[in-house]
Every structure is written in C-alpha cells, then in structure tokens.
Image (cartoon, rainbow, N blue to C red):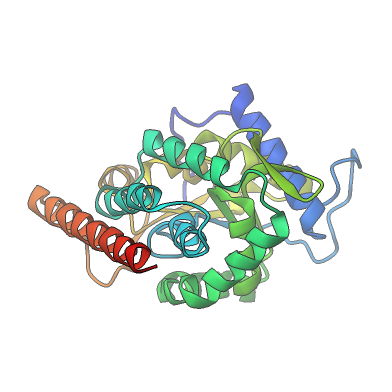
Amino acid sequence: MAQQRHPAVGTSDEAPQDAARAVVEEAARSNPAVPAPEDPTPPPPAETTATAAFFDLDNTIIRGAAAFHLAIGLRRRRFFGTWDLMSFGFHQARYLAFGENMQQIKQVRSRALSIVAGRSVAEIAAIGEEVWDEVLSLRVFPGTQALLSDHLEAGHQVWIITASPVEIGELIGRRLGVTGALGTVAEHQDGFYTGALVGDMLHGRAKAAAAAELAERQGLRLEDCYAYGDSINDVPILSSVGHPVAINPDVRLRRHAHAVGWPVREFRGRRRRAARSGAQAASWAGAVWAAGLVLRAARRALRG
C-alpha cells in the first residue's frame, strides 16, 4: 500500500529524540533481541526479520488504559487514597468515551510518578503481575490477539509501543509472547523509583522516533512494517510505516483513516456511534461507573 505521510511526523525535536533514545536503550538492556547501544555498528541477530509490527497498548491491545488498572491494584494496597482513585476513574471514563487527551495524560503521569517515588521496582513489578492475572488478561481484544499471532507466525518482530510505563508494556509483552516493548521510562536508582522520567513520555511523535531508531538498530525496513493504533495521537507512527491500521479508532483517527485510505479494524463488539448522543451516553455511563467505584472504595475505607 502506498505510504501515507502526515505533517506531524518528524524527529527533529529534542524531546521525541530523547524519549526514543531512552526507551530503546531500556529495551536493549531488558531484551536480548535488541543490540546494546554501546556497540556502534551491531549486526542484527540471526533470527531478526526485516519486518516488524508495532502495536499501541491502550484500547488497541487491551480495553481501556492499562495504567488505570494498575492504579486500582495500587489503591487496594494502600499506595494512595480515594480521591486519587476518583481522579483516575474519571480520566478512564473520559478516555473510553472520547479517546486520549494529552493534558489529562500529563496530569495522570505526574501523579503516578509521585505515587511510586521511593517504591521498589520489584514491588511494583510484582503488583503488575497480579493485576495482569486478575484484570488485564481478561481485557485483551481477541481480534488484536489474533493479529499478534498472525505476525509472529509470519516470522515478524512484534513490539508493543506505549506511553504507559515500559514495565507494563514489557509485562504484557512477555505474557503475550511478543518480541519486546517500548514505553515511557521512569527513572530508578538502586532498585527504587525516583519520581522522575528518563527522557519524555513515549507519545505522539516520540513513538515514531522510537520506532525509527529501533528499525535502524534492527535492520528493519519501515516501508515493510506495520503499525496499529487507536488515537489521533498515533498518526505519526502510523504514517511512518508502509502498513498502517487503525484499531478501535477514536472519532478523529477514524476520520483521518478514511481520508487517507488506511484500513480500520473494530474489535469492541459493536461500532462506536458517531452521533454526539452516543458519546454523551458513554461519558455519562463512565462517570456513573467511576462514581460507583469511588463510593464502594469509600465504604470499604469507613468499614476499615
């Protein structure tokens, strides 16, 4: 298919380059398939193919935001209080109804970093494993899982690429058997989180920059690669590959995909209604759900 380009694509900004470098170096340390960055001209591993598939995580592989469900697990273990839970629930409801909002993502990121500051990486990783078993494994879209399997069976590399913490991406990647994961890197020293980031969030153009850097290291041809995303913010990485696909797209990405001729796949059980009344109903339903969640948490706290 002809490669589509978008004005938002570019890697000249320092922030996307820093984010790309941070996540690729983190992947190199944690995944033996990625050459170590110290080697200036590493040959690709023998098993590496010239094709990869890049999958966004939230609302592409799993329903909703993985970080929200991790937050629920942390709340149950008293990492933070009811008001934080209410805020996370509200953002989750809006995300399910309307898609990503960069300002909200930054707010949630800032609070999440403060919550884990001083906590051990091993502790958060163990909680993440439990959250996968309890919740996330049940929220994987079967249609997306089938696509993952198809790429793996074809001998392609399969990478999760997400603005969520890289630890979440790596956990889900291990459980799904993919090649690896790139994500936002939270700084840690001596095994404990500092509350700061390494680089910037892996979001928007930073995703495209990270994919391009990984492709260079792995000897991948981006024009032969695939990318899957659900948000208008995924347009940069979708535009950078030869085979972009919109999965469960928000309204703006669906409109863009139709305009440029990208395939659209819908795995949510039924197509989202384009009418505003449908979006409003989803928003109200999400708000009621979040309020119920908070009320139940408050009752448990009072009983405790």
